Amino acid sequence: MVKSCQQTRALLASAFVTIREDEAITRLAESLAAPANGQGRPRKPRRRHLVLDVSIIVGVVVVYAFSLFGYHWLASAPGPLAEPDVNTAEGTVVLVRFEQLHAVQNRLDVKVLVMPDDSMINKRLNVLNTDTSVRFFPQNDLGDLQYPVGKLPAQVATTIEAHGEPGDWPFDSYRTDAIQADVLVGTGDGRQYKPARVEVTGSLEGWDISVRRVGRDSRDSDRPDNVVVTLQRAKGPLVFDLGICLVLITLPTLALFVAIQMLTGRRQFLPPFSTWYAAMLFAVVPLRNILPGTPPAGAWIDQAVVIWVLIALATALVLYIAAWYRHST
Image (cartoon, rainbow, N blue to C red; front, side, top):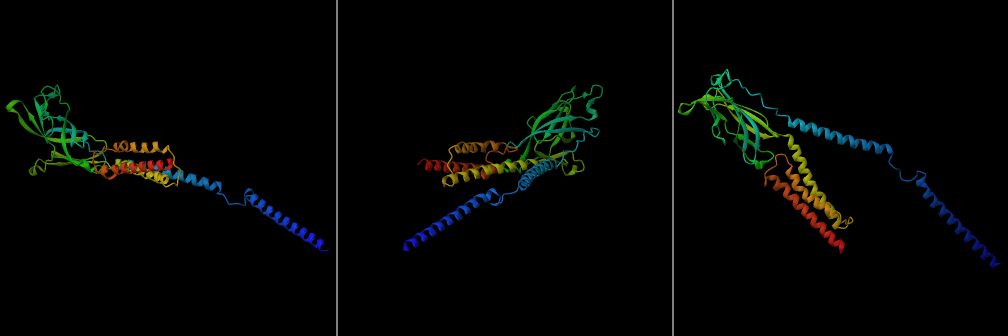
């Protein structure tokens, strides 16, 4: 009797264990089948991904279009110089054409052309009927500009001084003294002075030019024959300057971030990154040299941006070497 009860209990226990095992297997099968039936973690719909991708592309295109429009608007804001008045009925005109500004040397290259009044021209041959020279103020590199008798006046290249501070790049501006011209007619001691009216024309790439007319002195204020020229950097290239500065600042930021991640062991050390660091280090000087106007060496941008970019990149390279040493040991 006792033996029969023990056998019954053993059979019941075995059946209970079998039922528990079947329940566990069923739950495991349901959990494995849930993702296949779409009952797991919901995935983002494909339509949402498409909308996000299109929005990013449209945003980039809009920003690009607005940047081009802004650059064009800033570059064309001041407008060109007014057409010069070359009417010689009331006297000789000296036309000054701008060629190039050397900001570091404070020199402005110009070409000078004399347009004599009717009394100095041989109407039949359309040439000068007397020796003529132009005395240009402020003093230029060539002294008196000579135009011999029997020839039609041609342009003569010379250089005048433009005062400014190139170290203030890109906010530097330059200004000439009052440009004045006197015409000397005749030869030897018999030459005579004739006042001339100065007119300016031309343009300089990357510069906005403004002209102010002045008299020879306070008594000639009603006859402003002279001009004062002011040159300021155009606003359009300032956007390009800002972009280059952002690139220069981004380089050491990325380099330090990657080096710190490798040194602290948060990311795997990768030996090929050494060439990446070298490329960034040697890219700084070319980026600096393509800035519009090429700021002089030692300008404020070198002190405030370039030198610190180089220091930060060198620091990142040192951290990378430390990470290499730590990894190798």
